[in-house]
Image (tube, rainbow, N blue to C red):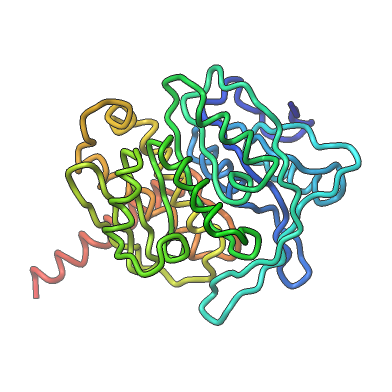
Length: 325
């Protein structure tokens, strides 16, 4: 495992969350930024005070060192860079609405990491379904134990070219997960023409305890065994949407892991809708902050609290003004 160098933040001694999947650089207008959905989730979790380890593979080249520095800065533990390996990259193209499209050069291998001591294991995107890393993820999700398991398909059609095979892999991991989060675009690719409620029902039928579908500016909808919950998106001036879904995922997991939701998800009883709603609102708040600034830059815990306090204060003032008018 890598250790922090002089002048970088001290790493936590006991990570609680393990994230499996790709770490790469997003190349936007010729400039490289650390990225990859699993890396973004790991950074998001750590910034929300959940000690986190990322099991990913990247090289000791310039892009790999950029990734390593990014992870150190957010106190994420990670597997040592591979000598002589080329770090994966994704060329990012933004449309007029700030939505991202990608072209990948990917090394999908993942280091095997013992699960002992972790409370949560999360996997997603390319590393979860492309060989050889897919086998590592499947073994982790099939392993016995009381780990909270979470999965985000984060579909990339350009590399997930065999839809039937990918759907089978996605559904297997969903069947082994307590939490599954996917976007409306993921849902349309996996289940063309299906209504959001039908997609959630399918994931719940497979075995997920909490299924969440994010819908951009329309907010999110979540399903449990006996209830459907909707939460609106936060109103922000969108800089771009890069990493917003990953920030949502990280915040949802942080809220679940440090609240009563984790206990309910591991039990036979359905989660309390109030706990689900609170976790989703926290996740929407994180996604809003990320969308309001350029690139994948998930919020830290102090930003979450200060932004929420400011929102509550502004709403209080607005309500008082309406009462006085």
